[in-house]
Image (cartoon, rainbow, N blue to C red; front, side):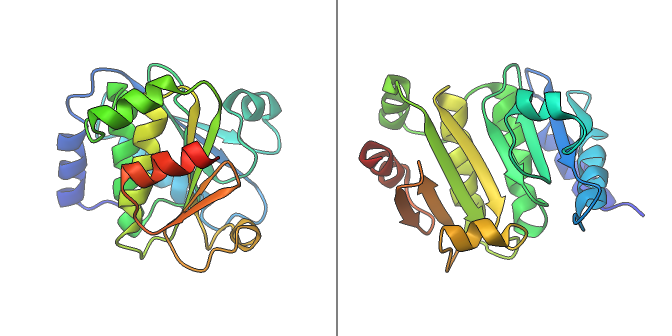
Length: 212
């Protein structure tokens, strides 16, 4: 049974119709303790079927160790969204409900290789970075504010080779959520030291990066 109905398939097709670059969705699954892995694979394949610009690769997190190292993933399930280059866009968990839009946004910005959402001042700051930034956003599928925070992480990762943007579905990675004391979502964590709660504007994230 298809996960996307005809109306949503058409909307996805329209959104991905004009991508200038190919996008690969590298999905890492696990054989054990991964309830949503088969659904994630089906979902990304249905998305890829709507666009000649999008392809899917599926790997086993435990068996395909070379690919795990290549994509620098440390847990699964995860979708690595890769355009003309690997911008560091990762979605950990299932991109369902509100977070489906985050997946589509990630494909769009990876396919374009830049963000149209960021202001010039933010882009200039990101261009000046010379140290790595690990930008994590904890989300849940039922949070209407989470996609705004998640897509900002993807936008910044595309704009700077020093930024790695990771979106993490908190309920699927409860140990990690506990480690970072996630009491509400979205929660932005920069380099493990700076926390910004809620859907923060770009300037607040820039300030957190400076603080980190």
